[in-house]
Amino acid sequence: MDLILSLVIGLAVWGVFQGVRMYRADAKLPGDLVSALESGSSRTSATGSLIDKLGERHVGRVHKIMGPKRVDKMRKKLDLAGNPNGMTINRYAARKAGYTILGGAAAFATLINGQVFLAVIFGVYGLFWVDFLLRIALQKRRDDIERTLPDFLDVLAVVVSAGLGFRQALERVSEKYEGPWADELKITLRQMDMGMGRRQAFEELRRRNESEQVSMFVSALQQGEELGAPIVDTLIQIANDMRRTDAQLARQKASKAVPKATLLITSFMLPATMILIGVGFYYASEVDFGTMFG
Image (cartoon, rainbow, N blue to C red; front, side, top):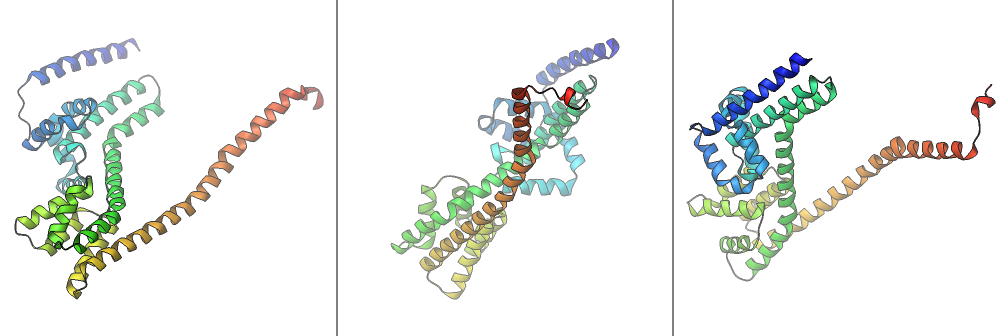
């Protein structure tokens, strides 16, 4: 045991010297990662910056392990999540490597102390924590867009009915909003300014957002344009449809929550309450069960 402890201390000291040498070395990093670390340093926590520094040298190795197909898939997923905290594919790889190193070190330290369960937890944490955070960011962005879209369409319909063209009204209203939906609209407007057709620009908007309501908005807008329907009526109809869809989803979530709450109560709270009541009766009655059962 003393030999293992000495080995761990020696590795820790060697790691400190290696970290200092790597910090002072003039390493050439990918341009994507350099720009992300510089421009996004103020958009992430100090802990996130340290994790990026820890794993930045292993970006290429992580890309090789992932493979080209998975790298492309992850790049698309990052775009769908809105690149949270300025995260690009290279920054994702750096953070993945950093958390893996930390999780592996913690797992090794707990494993040599015989705590296998904690070692497994730390290992899973290091491997999947970045993906878990990315999934949360993706869901939050989608929820923000779907929550903002109906009210945005109502305002857009009012502005269009006041006499502005659809393109000018879209630009005017998007300037008054903040958040992921406003960012997406600004990208769409910039693409249209660069010569992209309106239909193609909105198709790109649908591609960047895997949201049912965004897809509904784009489809209804294109169908209304093809059929010659008034744009104001189309926008109001889309907003009403989205609110009905949100109400249906809320009722579905509520109906699923009741069985889950019932299962939680019957599985944990009720048995614990019965045990607590039984123990209270036992100590209050002062009955000697040893004499009762012989």
